[in-house]
Amino acid sequence: MENQNQTVTIVDDIIAISHSDHKKFGCINCGCKNGSVSFSTPGERAWNCAQCGRGFVIRASGVEKPLISVVLDGQEIYPELKPHPRQGTPAHALEKGPDGDKVLTVQGIGLYMVPGCFVCGGGMALLPGIAITVHLKPTIETVIRLFEDKGVRTYPGDASKLKDMKGRVTVGACFKHMTNLKCLMESIKAANTIRKGMIEEARK
Image 1 (cartoon, rainbow, N blue to C red):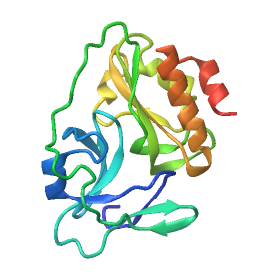
Image 2 (spheres, one colour):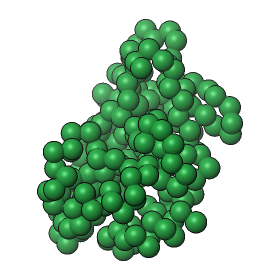
Image 3 (cartoon, rainbow, N blue to C red):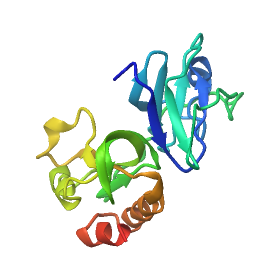
């Protein structure tokens, strides 16, 4: 799979930045240097910021043929290597606030390997998605059951925490259902929890 082109369907423009720029200036949106790789090819990484959740591509120097492609308005393109939008502002570490009484924390839309769309299903693919961190009950096992195993999975590395109180799950969406994903994200943020009815409403 590493040597195959990967198509990502998203709404907002995804750009590629150099590895050196990312090291100096961090996330293209907030400047945080922390994050995670959702998929990689030789010389490229699909990166999600730990602070704001913004997804973008990090490209090593010397890469002549990009392998991660993006679908925008029905056209397949390869993210263009651009100067860092925050060039000149040094990267900073993740700013962690107190969890307090938060039940769930939702990061902004990034790029994740998920088993399809949470609305219409599909197979495993690199898609836009949200990462939900569970601080208290319900457990992530319960959260996954609420989605009926459609478009949701435990975050890589958290599989052993299925019965624990804290962990992360990722929820994906295709281009057609990006509005549904944004609706779900805002509902979770506003309610500080997740319920079956919220998912059903977001799927409409």
